[in-house]
Length: 357
Image (cartoon, rainbow, N blue to C red; front, side):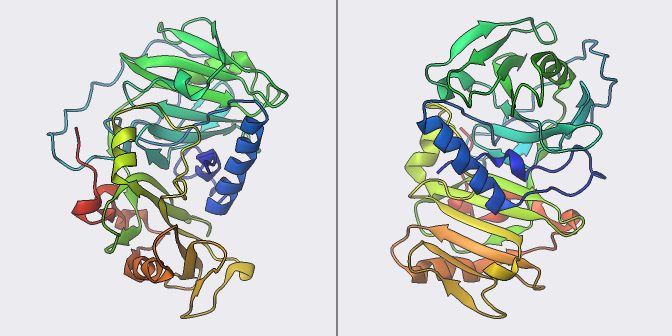
């Protein structure tokens, strides 16, 4: 399964309204997109995640102002063997009549941000910023490459797809060997001219490490952390998740053997482990102090401390007992206080962290 995690992203600025969607909504969105793909539409969306791409400054230039801006210097190389660093190189900006959200989801291929109408409304598009060396075209088999005008003087093209559900996808080079991707939910939601304006407004900046309120002290041997997603609760609807996969799968992703379409930050395929905290819903409440494990799905859940959130662990492991052990080892910081969160690298034991190449 590979959901579209753009629905997890927050509004464009720190003082924007809280996100409209949680992890469950993202999973549902991804399944809808996969159905489209099976129908013959190869839609690789975004998500999430980074390595040596970092954090950003908020870009607030006027919609018509596309003057060249120097690309931020390349981050200092991480020593070989040091923990792999998940992070972002942008916070959010305004361009072309849209607000591009601060990214809150990252994986081994890049990071993801939602794009919303500047004056409010539902999500219109998604922005995926790939780490250097990753080629977005490999996620769109059969798509035709159609050249278009440069973005900030660098090469750009559209990926033309077939099928009733095909989306417009703009790809451009934002730095040497590094590409970004913008896709509209529909031509009506974001015409191609506006897509160019949004792309022109993107300027990478200083690397910022991803943080998370989640900490887990027990993970079965042989797994590695490959994805992180977290947004503060603000008005009460925050979320956070960690994605882990077998070591061989993680090594393939890190080696850029080809970006995965719709990387799923919650359930990285049949062999992955997903750890998530989401807003508690009455129909999903196991009861105070109780752990509920499903018989027909590899999942255990319980109320997180405070009673407002649900803590959930998924994974096709040897036994439900192992899921319970993971669940019991999870600690959650206050989702309303992101200043108390820790770096994503430290969310799992050192043995579960990938090493930088």
